[in-house]
Image 1 (cartoon, helix red, strand yellow):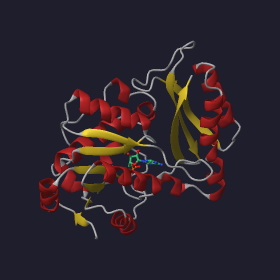
Image 2 (cartoon, rainbow, N blue to C red; image 1 turned 45 degrees about the vertical axis):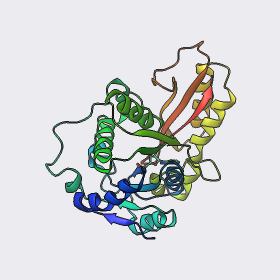
Image 3 (cartoon, protein in one colour; image 1 turned 180 degrees about the vertical axis):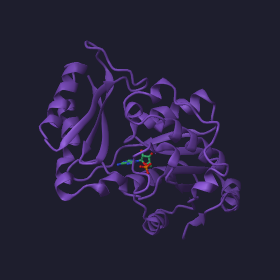
Image 4 (cartoon, rainbow, N blue to C red; image 1 turned 135 degrees about the vertical axis):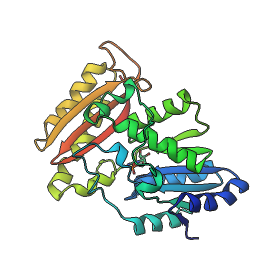
Length: 281
Ligand code: AMP
């Protein structure tokens, strides 16, 4: 069945009422330009609840000045076809004025210190914008469970903290990163890459593999191995390579051993890409 497309708050409420009466509901928040990574989250959501809603909203609040808000890829017809193929009941695709009827919100969620490191250091205010819109989407859709990707590890950690710290009545579930056959993590932003850049972008995956191969040698060894793999690709400009505690995102001191996250961020031309993997340092 074709999903119900809700553009307004009213349409959303009408579309959701029978679903809430009938059983549990899962929400997969997205910015559209859906790919196999998003599809995998919808499939996971289907296993967690009786019905699934997908939101498609490019949230201006999480884009900084000079970022790609204006040219972010949009493909609503294809997104809808994917949602239909995966049995999504409702697609919430609001305009900016539906989500922010009073303009930019005066009151926002603060991501705190965890929102200021790594991605947050390069993109000030980004995570406040993400948390604010997700809290709003959770309030509008009222799902029992919300599903996010491990691809955006810091975002996922912050969303879990928001739900805990602010007692948001939702369960957070996560799905693993879906990759191209050569290892590049699927991302809507991969569409920006030219053929040459697309080949260079695999360096992020090679860095994660090199870091994983050095696992057991401690954080510094993992970091150095990943950094060397990125440095070997001249068209890739490294933003950060970090080995952090998976819950707090604090850097792990040398000599630390145990489960950790290896995170990389780099620019290929004008396109900024991120990736991560769990490692046992
Ligand atoms: P976005 O549309 O990029 O904001 O992403 C929407 C959701 O899809 C987020 O929870 C992302 O973490 C997740 N996601 C993005 N890329 C992937 C991927 N390659 N594999 C799995 N989940 C992903």
